[in-house]
Length: 204
Image 1 (cartoon, rainbow, N blue to C red):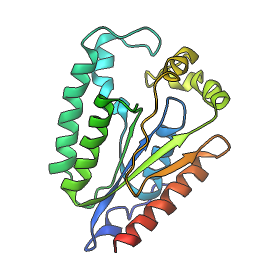
Image 2: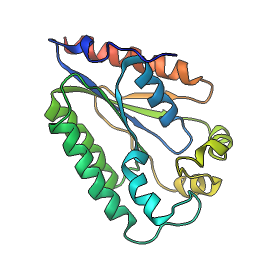
Image 3: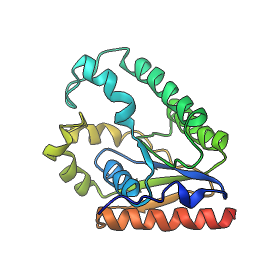
Image 4: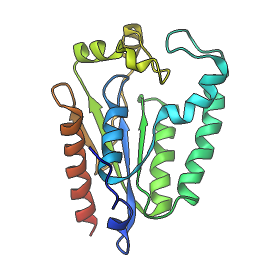
């Protein structure tokens, strides 16, 4: 599907373009849905690998072996720079799709708050979207060869570790919870877009 070219123009004179935050476990479809949203609306995708991959590339992360101590702190420094650029340098008409795996833990709640604050600083509508899928679907997707290219986790053991940690579900009034188990990427993205449009209309 060709990318839409009116992504910035549709918000001209009304409001800053929205910031959509896709949250969910590995293999739930965050990257695929984000890319479809970008094709439909021309939004900029800032996924967790865009932030982490400069560090992952240097340390030779392969998506399987544990990462060395200190990796997370360096990724946080990159994330801080990216968030500041999005908040202060990106033109008003640029919409964003952020993605993350988030747990209901202090560090991840802070990460969520930082992204929410970017939307507030931009005067943009903030739309958190929690993507979910049944366990069997996640296990089938996580071993996909295509995940190797972007240094994504490729082991079902990752999902096993995550089961012991409660996922973060935002309490923001714009939050959408969407099960992707039986949805195509296009269908999932379409539901997200309809929800975003409803949030934009409610804001006026």
